[in-house]
Image (cartoon, rainbow, N blue to C red; front, top):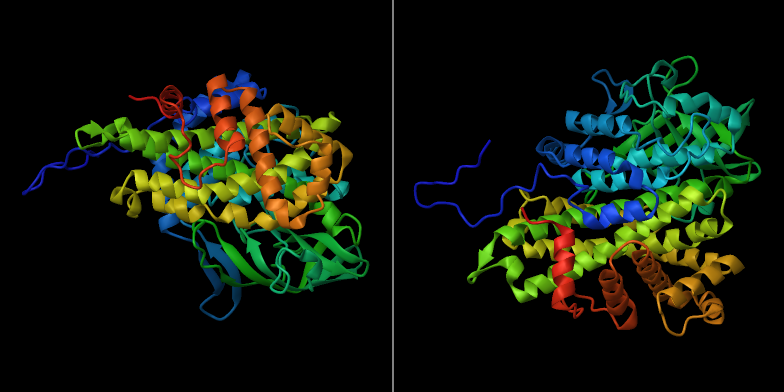
Length: 543
């Protein structure tokens, strides 16, 4: 329906049209090039169709509705019986159905539960990146379901049992045993009140009971509580162990999982995050007793990768909104996009995002090839925490700057920018905060192959004063870990840009992010006029 432009006292003009019914893939040249450079060139038409669908007005409206109508906990019924269910708005269920039909929860796995062939990670990430632009909250259960299969590989019999349901492209939100459903999703609950990220401090106990275990304790964050089963950590007799805890028991009764409340979060409002108690809850062991951390390591790598991809997606939508607005809005006799300072800001934002997109797609290529290529496996181990640290920490300030480009129009709730801004911090906090990521970078650098790879990235990015000896020394300096992780991510981004973007873009990124101190504020990087024009054209074609 067209907006009313004429009122009794004035006419509305000089406003940008709604940013909708756009191809989120074809209109994003950096994404197109990054996908092509990392092996996904054969899927251009399919990705463009996906981008047109998710960039449509209907999908954008579903994203808004899912966040304006957050989930509600129903702990009890009218008679006092426990229900422990969460009610979601229909828009959330539509989004979940669309994502599962597109395979975002399972397309990187074969029917046997093994990793699918390349370029499955690159192609999935491109779709995940586009969906994050529209609605990021529902991607939490999508990410967890996809990543959980990596941990379940430690228990082949259990994996074989549930894999057909997880790999299904049918979304089934019904609250009933997963064996009776057409498809299932998986959640996670790792952290507790007293420990947070330090999961070794968990106090939840797991007592053997025949072929299963009985869990007693709590989780401070249990995400997507209407999932059909959850990976959790608990203290078994031999130490911290991973378990799969189903919502229902074999006899059809509800498992002893007691939802205490839903978190009132800054953002991520469409997604339910809960506090839960386990009152002798039934669970299956996943992996050996005492091997809980080792069991979940590959799973955590996948969730961290998704955090980086999603944050880049949030940044992309913020930039697109800003550039689109400035293409249509005039002030002081010129379009905003033709004003020199605004061009400098937008070009700097576009350059930042070029690096982020190139990096996450190159990282996905490493995941695609890691099983058969030791160097790619080392790249994934080293760069995943650095990329998550850098991109997820960059997103909030980036989105704020994009919001300012719209002025007051960007600050009101009718705009998408406030939702993007509220959503931005969560990926830096979940799945390991910034300091934890930097510590993981230091741990990775203790490996000979990872240290050599870091030095090679620095050399290729023309980062002065960085060699194997300097990297080894830095790996022992915990206080400087943030500087090391940030420089590593920037160097890896510069190298990734060399592999797919125009030379002028790669050079501008290396010069402004590596060769000179980068300003904390966008618009002060000294990008020349010709490169700025190229960046803006690449960011969003004018129509």
